[in-house]
Length: 229
Image (spheres, rainbow, N blue to C red):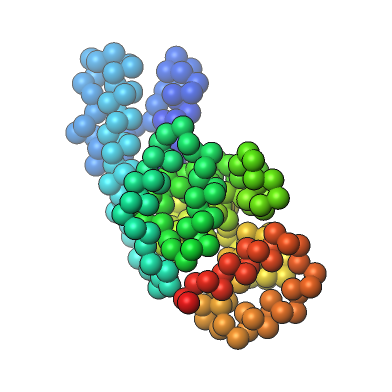
């Protein structure tokens, strides 16, 4: 949403140098009075716009409803695991997120959908480098991007949601030939998609390259076979 980006820019630059944009027409009744101080007007408009973004938006004319997420093959984690994840996301133990997400995937579970936006934000903020977890040298986790961990543990809904938000669009958007030329994350996503539709072909493709794959890639691809067991 460009309006939100403009508001963010105004907040960073300062109201003395950048005037915030007008609110979208549906939010006009919620604007602060004209006689209010500029800071009050800005905060009131930003609050209304933030709530509007969280609530959703009407589709523009001609824009169809996106196709739904694929069918999930893994069950949700147990309720107590939701509690653990909530603590990891907001507390001082966030550095343990990579290990937690990897274990969820290894055990054949998937993350509750309500946590996916926060996890995708976390992945987007760390997309420039791999997930770093002190003390796990040799485990392969410190070399795996956050996006791979989130998209694997999040299941089909994570993949679907990632495609809906421009801020997450480059986390793992594999090209058509991702299996041949993509990054390790893109190849894992492509392999998962192929296996869900044509398991025999997925096994054939993996067998053809198995001997030449690095250990970290082998591990990530092998974990995909736990789905549906």
